[in-house]
Image (cartoon, rainbow, N blue to C red; front, top):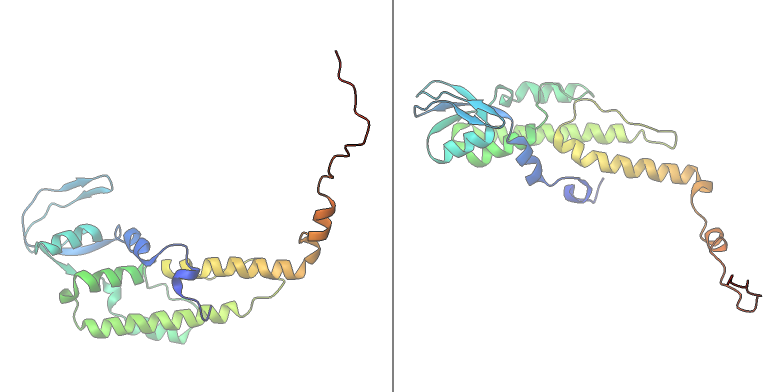
Length: 208
């Protein structure tokens, strides 16, 4: 994977993954009073001042931009113990949500003032991401021509997005290398091409 950017290997852009992650819920503390809001994805509310409630991230951001709420960072964003767990084991931690990278990025972009010691949290997120990618690369080093499937538990959305196409191309390359007889031979293909019609051959008479 070295020498290639995330976008070159991924199936979705970072913006597309963030859009998907916006449906995840987060806790807010409203600064207003309102009856429940009804959407296709569900009903959220009612809203009362200083009474915490769960809403999708996209709604939390919209209310935050209008100074209508405070966004509470998720519990998992106390990351010191998670980083230690990631460093102590080759297994991926189960404590992080599937969209932990996208959620943290959305909160840094739109609710940084609601995150205590945001610089430290951002640094921990980056450290966790680096440790996890190192473990993924270690797992991928076990690839060989007999590999038919790969199972890595507890990957995040961004990690799956980057790793999946790489694994697919690697398995395909091993398959072609170990089974050259299944790769079409250009010369043999050309021999099977339809021959040009012989204009000198006798023609069959059409029926009257």
